[in-house]
Image 1 (tube, rainbow, N blue to C red):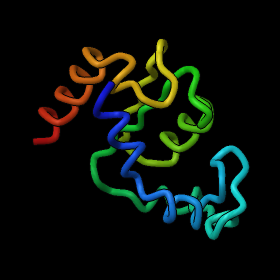
Image 2 (cartoon, rainbow, N blue to C red):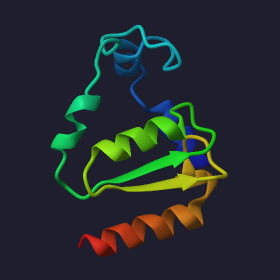
Image 3 (cartoon, rainbow, N blue to C red):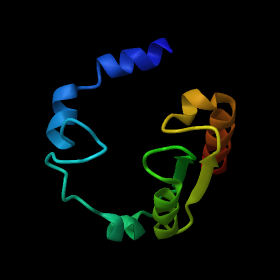
Length: 104
């Protein structure tokens, strides 16, 4: 979609490459040793954790994050990779709206 192409063109490649390196599959940039999994329990705001079945950030990893955030909600998008807002827009919209309505 045009909006995705626009986002990729304007995403700040210099910043991405500084933080991650040339790829986020093997992080060699400035955040290569950054890990805050043990601090997720400090999150006290309503939290919606989303995962795509085929995301490079695996559903199991996202489930682990969800388990560390008390009261969070986890949603798995079975037909998505990293962008359920594009890959499953109707369900993404419904899940997001319901979550926001619940926490308005």
